[in-house]
Length: 242
Image (cartoon, rainbow, N blue to C red; front, side, top):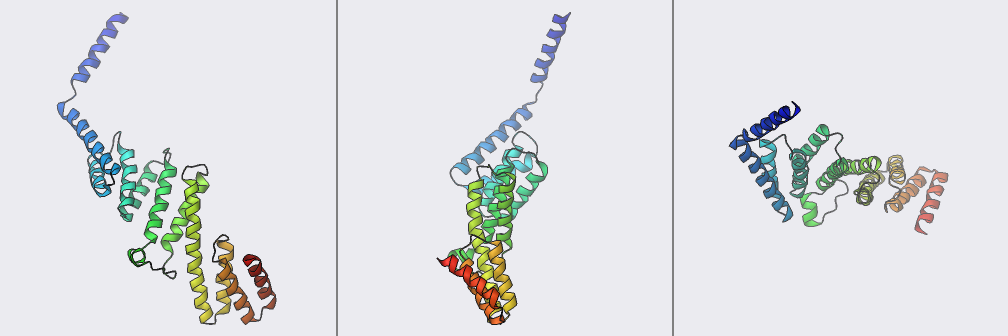
């Protein structure tokens, strides 16, 4: 009896396999061809073309074996073509739908990279202009995202690069605060200048801008008649320069 049942089951599976429509077979083949095309574009640096094909796959086949990898590839392609809005939208959606994915460290790393990319404006790169007084929104977000990556995944392969990038971002944020503190100095708002400089010392301990921050503290405290604080800042400045 068991042999008869087994034979019947085999026949059912064979019939089920034969019943797959030609359209379904063609659809699977089309998806594979599209994904292979996108990969070839990525391999040779044709990121805009890759993004176009990947978006088509993402729209036509929102669920399936390629879904997560397509989204991972998309966020990278959008980053390479500097489309930060689409990159961030893809990343946020992926994090929402895949909270336990094995590559979340990569996804968070990509989000930080996108914010860091947005930090550099076209004109700054084109003319090598350092506008320390401009908004620090994207620099702050990138700094936070790299820090979150390191906290969550300290052993990630992306953590060493994240730490290096945080140093550069720390210097960028410190330069902004220096510009603000110097503005306060010019306006003779010495308390505000000293507090802003003190914030640099506390928040960006490894930034080279610490020297200028200490100079501002010495000048501000001296103008305010706070001799003890001025002397302490001067001692720190001397220790820093030695």
